[in-house]
Length: 338
Ligand code: TXA
Ligand code: MG
Image (cartoon, rainbow, N blue to C red; front, side):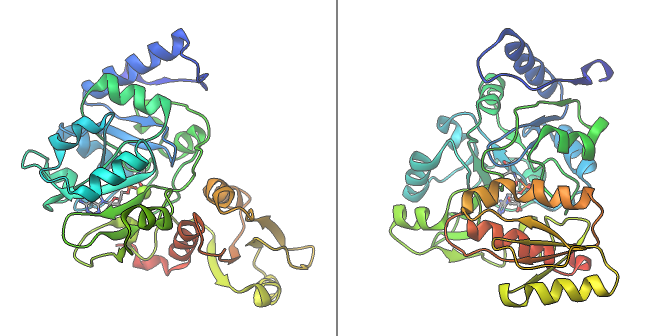
C-alpha cells in the first residue's frame, strides 16, 4: 500500500475540502485493510476494520502487543451497539446516553459474530464512541466498527499528538491523521457491565464519581478474570525510571539520586526547593489539566534524557484518579510487563 503512505498536516476543524478528502482517504485505507492513526479526545488510536482479522493482526504486529489482549471497538453511532453487544443492560443505556460520544468504554456481552482477535477469546467486547470530530467523521463514513488501541508500542506512553505517533510508529502506519493535541489526554474510563455489579476496570477520562452519581451505586473494582493490559502493573511507562514519594520527602529523595550521579526530574503539583542540578516539571493543579498534559510531559522528560523521575501523586478527585493510576503503573517494576 505504498501510495497510501500519505502524511497529512494539521487540519482545521471546519469542514474544508481537504478535510473531506482526508476523511475519504482514511476510509478507503480502512476498507482496504490498512492502518490509520486517528485522533480521539483521549489519545491517538491505531485503527483498523474490526471485522477484518488480517487488518486487526497488523495492529498487534505493529504495537508488539501480546495476542490475547483484547481491543476496544470504536463506533460512530449508538444505534450500532446491538450489532456488537448481545445484551444491553439499562446501566449501559444510561451511561451511553450521558457520556457518549466521550471518554467512556463499556464492556458488554459480545455478539457471536465478534472476532476472537478483538475480544481475546472472551465472551465480552469493549465499546466506545469517541468525542472527536475527525474520528466521528471517519467512523460514520466507514460505517462499521474500528478496533483502535492507543497508537504506541506495547507498554509505552500513549500518544497525545500526531507527532508522537509519527516518532514511535512512523512508517508502519498507512496514514497518520493529525487532529491536533488530544483534549482529555488520558485513555477512556472502562466500566464492566458484562456480569453482575458494574465495576471499574480502568480509571480514565470520565471521573468515577460522575458514573457512580448517574448509576446511583458505587463501582466495584476490576474482576480479576478479565484481561486488560492497561491493568498490568507496569504500563504507560516512560524510558526514565519513575519513583513515587510524598511531598515532604520529595526534595530529599531527588537530592539523594542527584548525589548518586543520576540526572533527576521532579514531577509534582507543588514545587519544592531544589538544587539547580535538578529539573522541575509542574503537574498542573487542576486534575483535568494534569491529565491533558501528563503524557506529553513524560515524553518531554524522556526527550531530555533524564535517568529518573521523582514524582508525587496528585489527589484522587476527578481525573486525578486516572493520573495517579498511570503514574503508579509507570513506577511499577518494568519486568512485570508480560
Ligand atoms: O481512550 C481509549 O480508550 C483509547 C483510545 C484510542 O480510544 N484506547 C485505548 O486502547 O486505550 P488500549 O488497547 O490501549 O486499551 C484498551 C483497554 C485494555 O486495557 C483492554 O484490555 C481493555 O481495554 N479491554 C478491551 N476489551 C476488553 C474486554 N472484553 N474486557 C475487558 N477489558 C477489555
Ligand atoms: Mg494503550
